[in-house]
Image (cartoon, rainbow, N blue to C red; front, side, top):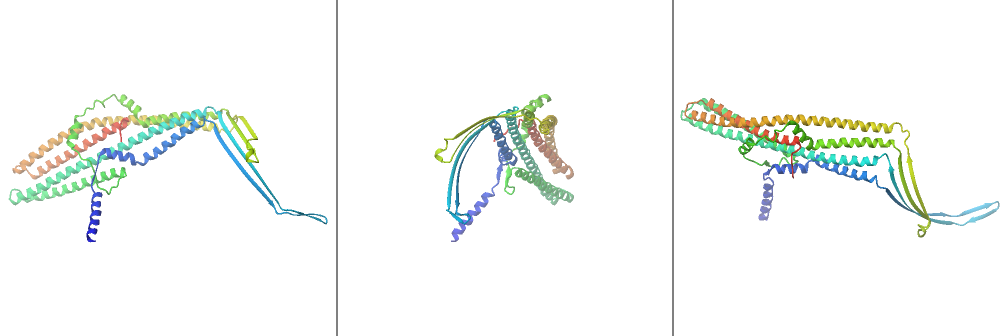
Length: 449
């Protein structure tokens, strides 16, 4: 019995430990999860199905309607009888029972022959709406992908800044141990020990703050992906120096096009701009549909029916009906004029929205274009600053070990080195984000998940 309990305990313990195993989350996995779990994407996909059914509905208005009906009725009447009196004469009436049955069937069809071409414009409008909604879905997916990339890069940035602070903490701890030992040997003053203790405490605080920033960024990413923030996740690590070398070696000639060419590419590729153009086209069809109500409406109808008191005789007696109906609108309280005006206002407002979107695209592209170039220069400068600060730290460290330098100068050199590393990491990741932002603004941000 005891052995069985041990097995059960071991099983649940191993299951718990396995569940708590850290999961490494790559960027590709994050994007895939975001696209699968995003609520707005799912809602837009559902709306897209509705738009597709509206296209089918519009085509259905060109097809004759067909309806069939059948009826069967049974009636039974019972009378318990009574008497009829004529003066002194009374005549008894016997009880009576009567039954009747009736059967009928009919088939009817109707078709709108002319309604001011509104039915044809409705097909074009529903198609334009469907295509616009498809573009909106594609743009929404690009939005989600871009947000995922930004949040993922933000986590990577926080992780690398944390690594810098952890290395700084290790250096300060080792320096404190060395200075304490040298003070014991009488090589440095006690003031240096106290000063390094304070600096070590500050390094601990910076490490804690960097760790908090990393956890906050990671939780923000996990929350956006609808993942459980209580589970241990880590982002995929990489060598920051290799990334910096690749970024420095990149050429921006492909981006340094004429600004008008960039705008042209964006207007050709941006799904939201294409969707807005289709909305404008749809509203134009809406005007034609509204104006169609001014025209006469012509419809045709066909019907066939049969009726009998016996089921076996059903079909022997038949009735056929064929007809044309013409409706001419003469006055309807300006309802049609109001609908036309409303459709025209919708068209004008959509045109204004399209113009505003085009202006916004140009402004954002211009800013991102300038930021990308400046970020590239900043990355190159910060990389040189790290090399310079690293060399300066080594020189001051050697001088201090030889007794030819003060601790304050060494701490300043180390602080400058840490700051240079932080700025280099920030500029590298900022450059990555601006690159992706440029692709997003141009509408060329790809995803294949």
